[in-house]
Structures are given as C-alpha cells and as structure tokens.
Image (cartoon, rainbow, N blue to C red; front, side, top):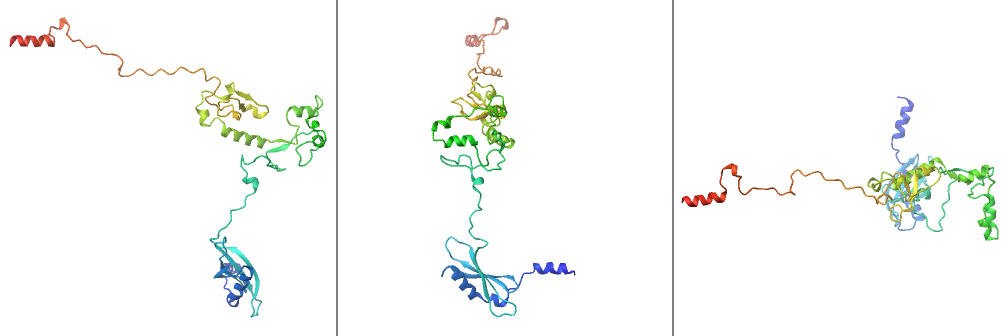
Length: 308
C-alpha cells in the first residue's frame, strides 16, 4: 500500500476525541454560560474532535429566537500536558436551526412599480443597459447625468436661467447628436433596447389574447401615435381612451377591439342550407286525383254504409 493511499484513508477516518478534553464538560459549560447568560445554555449535545488534543463541546441553546442553535466551546491541551485550556466560545446553527433567508442585494430585489415619490434609484456605472453618448465634450463628467454648463445654470440665483438651453451651431456634430437624441452622458445600449422591446412585447404584443382576437393590428389603426428612434420601427403609443392600452407603448402587431376601422363591420357569414327543411310546409292531398280510379276515404265510408 502506498503512502498516499494510507494518508487518504487516515484522513477519512473519524478522529477520536482526546480523553482529557472530552471530559472537560464543566469547563466548557462555564465558558458558555459566561458568554451567554445563566439558564440559556441547555443540555450537552455532543463532542466533536477538531484535531489532535482539540475538542469542541456542543450545548443546546434555549435563547428565544435561536431554535436549533448550539453553543460551541472549543478546548485544547498541549502535548503531554494534563491541564485543558479554553480556546473559543461561539453560537453556531445546528442541522435544524432556524436561519434567516439568504441576503439579496437591493438591486436584485427591486421590481417594477416599487419606486415611489421621492425615491432615488442610482444607476450603476457599468449598467449594461446604457452606453456612453455624446455630450459635446471630450469626456463627460464622471457619475453625472448633466453637462457641466447645465450644472452651472442650475446653481444660478435666477430661476429663469434654468429654462435656457444652449442651442448648438447648425450643421455641427453637436447639432446632429442633438437631433438624434444622443447629446447625453449615456444612452440606451443595444442590450437595453432589446430588453425593453421584449418587456413591452410581452405586455402588448402579438401573442397576447387581446391581439389574437382583434379584427386588425395596430399598424393600420388611426389611434396609433408613432415614436422616433429605432424602437419606432416596432412600437407606437396607443391614443384610444377606450382601448385597453391607452397611453402605453404597443407593438405594431398588437390589436384590440377598439381599432379605428372596426366601425365598418364585416357582413355576417351566411349559414349553410339546412339538411332538413323545417321552414316550408309540405302539401298533402286530401282526395286522390281522378285518374287513380280510387275513392276518397270519406266516399269509401259512405259506400260501405250503403251496402250494409
């Protein structure tokens, strides 16, 4: 047997607690009660060998709110020493301990509609939904959403100057960026556009039940208000106050019963002719025709009476 195999089997073999350390239950209990309070430390649960001449005593915790927790007191002794010394005392959860749920950062807990008046939602500098825009400067101010000149206007004493907007020179790169809506510190990235489009299409898209039952799509509706930018190729704003999506961004493939052309109702389909005609009365002759040479039922009865 190789030395590596021997070490592997030895590491998997449970350690035998040191006898003197395992017998130091009173020392461990006194340490636990000093760290906690009298009456909180319960029965002795078990002994765990942590290493050579290192043992941890576990005691039941009776503290309200710490169900299933244990007081862990570690004791040890030096080689060839007869006196056991105290190492540490901690409160640890047991197998059936009552634990708090795993902490989740606020950025992951936030859901649409959670923000209220006065709440601020800081945007991460590395947010994948955004990318640098064109602010007219060599480098936009870090952690800022307004340009430096706008910040100076806000700080001015005259409140009217906040309404003044510097108009870029016609034909310049700044003017083109202003027209395209990119003269900002950051703009939507391709990822941000795709996630927004998927979110809007899920709420007001072609696969919704309302769109499936609509007489036509929004692309031909007179209540659709077009929007600019790349998203305008697939979305618009509904302006029908009676529609279910009034004031919302809707997919051009979306639709509802409030379509502007729904007033021209299609002709109802004609039902198929019935197999059995129950609307027309059938004619039955009471007397047979003369060429049949037979008597009617009434004449036949008179004839029978005459012979009798």
